[in-house]
Length: 571
Image (cartoon, rainbow, N blue to C red; front, side, top):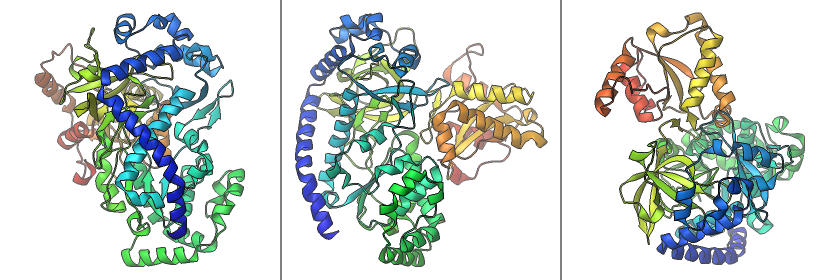
């Protein structure tokens, strides 16, 4: 670490001082949640209240939370799709105020069949970066040694393609990296160019090739823990190539990179690291594998999601990274950040009340005709809620389909823990697969093969990596000679409908979908049990075409499957 570490420490000192002031302001705001949220709502109305969407819906007349509740219903992406289309064509005023410049669209899959285009504006980006900085100062103050080490951050390209009007479309994390000041970039191991590698295997191999040359990595951060598990297994699987590349100053996957990226990465690759290569060889000789816990002795902290289904990855994560502290970097989605955690090994975080305006629907009332809608300070500890967002991107009372539990308060601001996506979404590793997407994909596949089934469910199944199974009773299986083609076609339909499912499949974080056979009569028994448990009638019962939780999937497979999953494949 030496002199370089001291320089990093000095370079970051002024920035840390500024961010501590931001943290102080945030904690002050949290003390009076109601006042803070009212002020945030007023500022967001002022920011985007003159947009066409706001005017069309009378939002320009809103002055208070009570006005908003009276004038406007809850929304989802479908309410905005026509206005987003206009934004894509360059009509800023469709959803945004004149002083809230559109910078890019971040992409996400959702409950609709097509990708969602979420506007990222100047105000939205400021909020996004401030949230990261406040989270970061908490981590750096808890682990002072990080000040002299570097961070390994995995990000994606913010400019995957351009809209009709020339606006970048991609991932907001890439935009944040691209806009870092030079002094800040020295704190990170990976160059921004890595985000420009579209081939998943080549991207992760290049990431490892550069990162393994750096012994001073103190923190590794990305969204899903599945990504880090995948990276660790790739390092072990291709350890001989990686060590050879380090010794020779080469890159085995160079031919798979865009030529301009390969050229610009040469200064990171050409320098030979013989001493580092020898160290890694000794690690392999001693342990029999090449895992992060062996190669980065200075590693202090991992930063990934811990909530919901992500918790299922923790045993695998600890196996390859060791028993390191893990700090959740907060409940967030393409539409915005929602919480700021300040403790290790815990997914709960303080609601980011200074950024967005939040409302909550009690879980038991979700989907009812007139549900109770609460402001943030009105939540009760131990209760679960769905979140509604009003943001700088022009969304009002937007249903994010996330279920959270209130576990306490910071001042009068709730501390929330993410539980799961809404009951019609499965999210094992970030794919956010919806029931509507499952129904459409299965329907198209059945039609293509001229096959009919009376009942089915698609279910997530835990493994290394996890995957999905189409659950069919024995008598409804496609002909055995067509089964492999059927599975492939269904998997391809899901990839076409859900961009994030495709990404997880392309990167190996999800296995190809397979058919799993249930004993005949399983669904009838399953339906009777559910009806008796919830008190529903036969007429009202709706068979779930998507078993959204690992626990429910494990239960069905263990009780009804013809061939039972191995115990270690179930969380």
